[in-house]
Image (cartoon, rainbow, N blue to C red; front, side, top):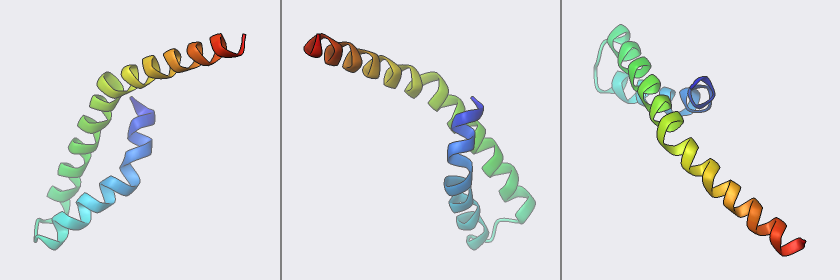
Length: 69
């Protein structure tokens, strides 16, 4: 779960933090909201998206190998 967090925290987290700050949410509360949101999003990516993408790539690689064999 750490790799999805690494990938999304910088851009997405900064965008959410900026939006919350512009909306007048206090800094510490904004940081907590962003932290919880990024952890939840990375968990969803690791649990839902990664296995599906891995399966799709596995099928694609197998089909490619069958064509070239």
